[in-house]
Length: 125
Image (cartoon, rainbow, N blue to C red; front, side):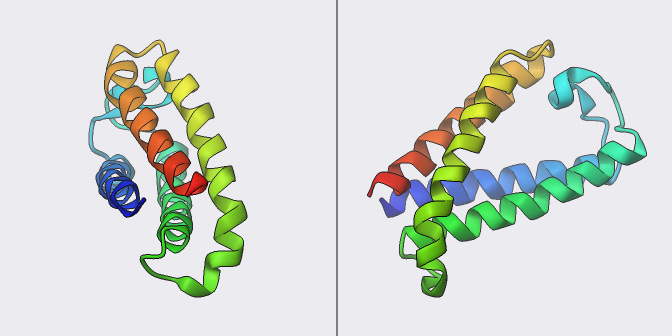
């Protein structure tokens, strides 16, 4: 189970760096939001990227707690919360794989599926 948590953490680091890049104006808009904002994201979407980082950190805390890696005091919450994380990645996978942006579909879609598999494996263990 821990291997899945570590894979999830690696993905979380990658996606966090990506979200930071978006928030600071990197021209990567084609990889998110259905490619609606090619190039730099507008200001409100940059704020949304920062909010996504906070959400990812919460998800990471739940995953590592449930996997028994750290944050043992959150285990009670993590046992339930991990299922919300899994559902989030189900919805994210559907959204990314059905995106009108080819780049989002082929890069973010598979990353979401890997994150989903990892959170599900941690959830059922």
